[in-house]
Amino acid sequence: MRKVPFYVFLFALALFFFAFLIFPLFGILKSSVWDGEHLTFAYLAAVFQNQSIRESFFNSLFIGVSVTILTTFLSLPLAYFFTRTTFPLQRLFQGLVLLPMIMPPFVGALGMRYLFARSGSVNLLFGSDVDWLGGGGLLGVVILEALHLYPIMYLNVTASLASLDESLLESARMTGAKPLTIWRKVILPLFLPGYFAGAILVFIWAFTDLGTPLIFEFRNCLAVNIFDRVTDMHSNAVGYALVLLMLLATCVFFLISKMLSKDVRVVSTSKGAQRTAGKKLNALTLVFVYAFLAAVTVLALMPHFSVILVAFSDKWFMTILPESYTIRHFAGAFTHKLAVSGIRNSLLLSSAATACDIVLGIMVGYLLARNKGWWREGLDALIMLPLAVPGIVLAFSYLSTFSGTKLDPLKDPTALLIICYSVRRLPYIVRSVYAGFQHIGEAMEEAGRSLGAGFSRVTKDITLPLLSTHITAGAILTFAFCMFEVGATILLAAREWDYPIAKTIYTLNMRLGDGPCIASAMGVIGMVLLGSCLLISGALLGKKMGEIFRGSSN
Image 1 (cartoon, rainbow, N blue to C red):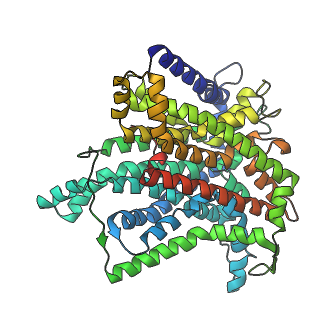
Image 2: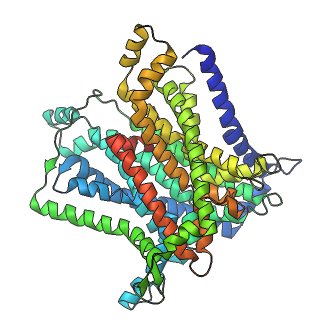
Image 3: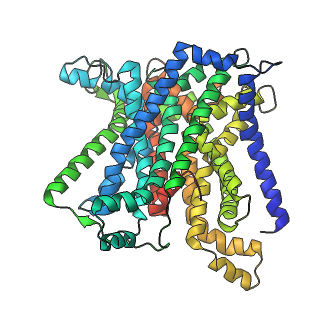
């Protein structure tokens, strides 16, 4: 890349992130410790002195830690079974364990309330009066988050185990090392970076999730406390202190994860690491594996099943299953004024954000893969920073920074929603494009340049065609996750005609009559859309799918 365009792009990219990431977050910091005239820590002190806020913080921390632990117990056996063993129906179960990703947890909460409420299907079936959701919905939030997020942990761990060089294990065995020693000295160091990458994403997602607690009406958590303070953010600075607390917590855990990953990382013998076929399981072990996989599959698909039931239900009150069924709620999803505008808005916003990320992702991926300058680590950290910044934090900072300007989201949130989606999802497409550059190498590009082709000609005729699969896969994933961005959407979209799908579903669910059923129908439509996107991306990327959910391109 020529020097002038190169530095122009770096400057433009830095300016973009400064304007829509660094500066808004700095505004949060300033409003948290500045009263207009003096430096003060009174707002932060008020947060820690308020018992209700302290409880909400520890509840969110409990949710994040609990979900991370549960996803660990679910994903580690799955990753081992699918990478180190061979058994019948393996491909079928590999597809089934990823199905929870096709539905955001706040959508699953719509149906789970019908099944596990005190007057829900489970209690009616067993004649019990058990509070299955526990703690006013806390247990339900934890379980639903874990069932949705374990595939992210699974993909990261699988990517690490699948790339394990068998020659390393064989060398260890030849030296007489015992299995436990091989696990501790060889497998664990190669496995931990992928685990920490998945664990921090799971923790941040669960710790900062807004949609699921709102649907379960569990309000005593940090995200909902921030949401409740949006209306008085200009008169009460405690909201800023809460946002700063959430941001500091996520950044600290993100940095700890990066440090731990870096400390245990080892170098593989070669890019062409060899893997032997997984060992076949004996009959007894196979029974255990099938039982575990079946249990995980049933639990993971329960939210999907419940949402589908609600979407098709005509009458469902104090009965185990709906008394009658109908398809009119799906018709309502395409004719209800609010639903139609929600689908239209999300399609437009997600398409625009994806288009921006494609352009940025290709350029950034190229810079990270083909350059070794001093600025590379800084650029990589800047691009991956949004992984540590929750959507609700970024949205709150936008409301604070751009209120009263031409970008005021209360007047028209379109521009800021597109920018927010783009900033939040850019790491995914950068990861995909970066993986593509690593896969194709530089030989083809060098051959084109040796024949006299310029940079633009090589890019158009060689690089982009070879990268097309990874660009397409990354773009599809970016589009899918933009469609169901929850935290930023709920905060930034204030007027009904500006609502994207996520806030439309939340709003309809709060309305009496058939509102929850239409919301569930929209959730089912979203499941089909998101599932199709993930299926296509998985087919294009194959085993590299897990690399997209890693926190670094190094």
